[in-house]
Structures are given as structure tokens and as C-alpha cells.
Image (cartoon, rainbow, N blue to C red; front, side, top):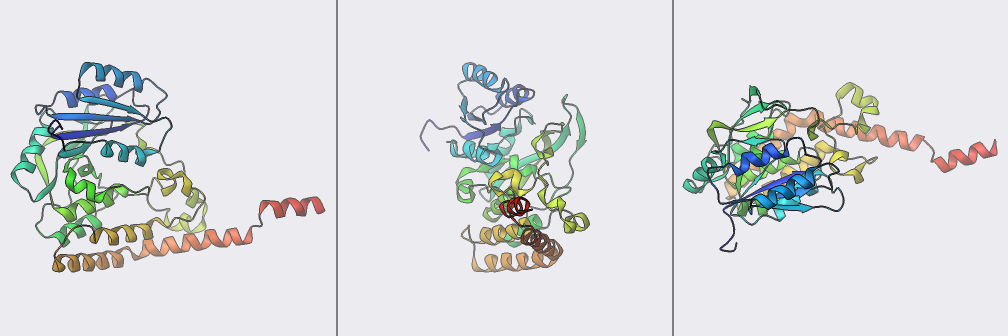
Length: 330
């Protein structure tokens, strides 16, 4: 980190964000803590996003704008802003969310005071497209415990229907972030990132509501158009697993058998070996993962059944070239 580097880097991955981007940038530039940079990576937007960003670059030297020549997909764009960061600390910021003026100052104060805290965030409220508060978010897994295996288990066993993973948008030590990157191109990769961060240290929640997550009809988490697995009989009875599916994060997986729940097993297992844990803590995390596997067994079986059904369908369905030859012969 060079002497001129900012203390905090804020990364904003954006695609066609003209409706809410200005409000987001204003909330950041009004922070009471001012030693930060804003890194915007534009994923080849087709609206006025680029012009808005250029205007803010001219207005404030802390704002840096990069435009991808083609849309890299959401995960690649999240990776890009983190790779461009220079600060000692890092924060991801969605283009449609807002931060209260004290957000950075409060989070930084905690991180500076307690070296065992790796990630700091604040309480969150859900706002509508007009910025009005809809509700206060109140689901909080215990991630501030001193026990590393217990933090690991608490994040493994979160209720994904309730957990918004807003901790992901807190301020993290970049030294730890560099050890857990890159973020994977699969469903719940944000949850895996949080699990890995928790292995490096405790989380801390600022008791004031300083972060505002915007709920609107065009938010990316609503994009669930790819439902390949929903056409199987198994999925109609047992559900289709995490949404958006793997194909939304990585289009190259479209039409392939992905088994997302088994992928999570692999990612969580690999996570245990990333930090320099004591033998007892590492063994404890292995035991916690075994407990999670038992609890998660029905979903793992569903993955196998769905993969088997898809494989059988492909085996029973002749290739198009064979069908065409048969039709010509008739």
C-alpha cells in the first residue's frame, strides 16, 4: 500500500444503474470520514450510467470510473472492483443502496480498536424506491463469538430465506479479503465469502441503523429467469435449490448438471484450510461441517436425484442429428 493510498476503498459494481446511482454516490461522498476512494466498474451499461459516473469523476477526485468493454457478469464485476482497490480496508456497495453519513467512521473505529474484528457492519433497514423505510432487518446470526468453530457453524446454518447477507456490505480488512478472494461464480457465493471471513476473525455490528438496502422491482436478486432444473419431476416435488441458480452467475454452466448443494460442501470444506487456525479450531470446524452435512442431507440427496433424472432424460433422448436422419429415412 503506497503512502498516498486511501484508508478505505469502496467498490461499486454497476449495470444500468441510472435510476439510483446518484443517490448512492451522494450518500458516500457525504461520509464524515473522508479518506476513501470510490471505484466504479460499469458492466457495459446501455443507459446513462456512464455519463453519471463521468460527472462525479469531474466533481470529486476520490471517484474512479472504469468501464468494461463487454458485460462480464455480476461476479466478475464484483471481483474487478476488489482487484482495483488500494485501501487498507474495503467495502462493497450496491449502486441502489445507501449509507448514513456516519457509516464509514463508525465501522473504522471498531476495526481500529479491536484487531480481532475482521468485518464491521451496521444494523440495516429496507427502503423502497423512494427511499422510505419499509422495515428494519432483524435476523442476525451470532458472528461476534470468540469461538471460531461456533462462528463457522452459525453461518453454515443460517436460514437463507431470512438471511440477507448484508454483512457482505460491511467494511472488511483487505488483508483478509485478499486471502479469501476470488468470489466464486455459483449460487450463495456471498454466503461462502462470509463463512471464510468469519474464519479469519469476529464480525461486529454497529448498533445504529446506518445501512439502507433498497427493495425495487429491477434489483438483480429478482432475476430468476434461468430455471432449467424446474422442468424435472424431482424439482416439482422437492424444489429447485438456490436462486438465482448457478447458470445466472456463470452462463457457461447453462444446460449442464451443476449440483449446487454439493458445490457448497466443497466450498465450505476448502474454506477450513484457508486461515492459519490452531489444530483444535480446525478440527472443531471439521466437526461443525459434519453436523451441517447431516442437517443438509435431504438437499444433497435432491441434487443427486435431479442430476440422475437429467442424465436419464439425455440418455433416452436421441441427438438431433439422429432424429433428423430418422425423419429423412421415413
